[in-house]
Amino acid sequence: FLLFKFTLFLFEYALPPLALKLRPFTWLSLEERLAYLESWQASSIDFKRTLFKMVHSVCVSHLYSERKLLVHVGFGPAMERRAQGALN
Image (cartoon, rainbow, N blue to C red; front, side):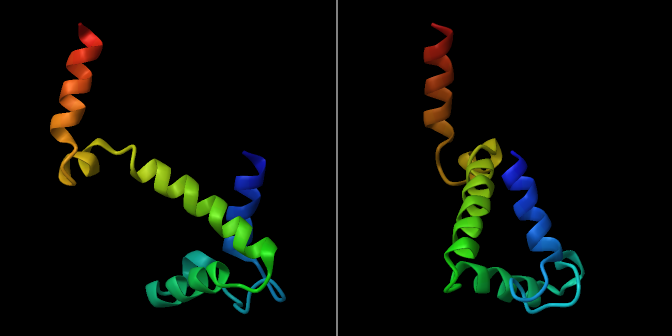
């Protein structure tokens, strides 16, 4: 948990050599934020790529736990069958 919080802090406030930006992440435009995240994902520095993978994994796992998304992509019937099976 602390490593995750530290990583989010680095994304927000990292300065050179970790990042070539002078403003916090949340102050960047959408295009700048996407380019910044892509630079971490494709970085030649293992540390940056590993931290990016960790944040990506946590975000994607949270996204896929959202019921509305699962229903939207077609998992609604399977989730209903599972819920009925758990009740029996």
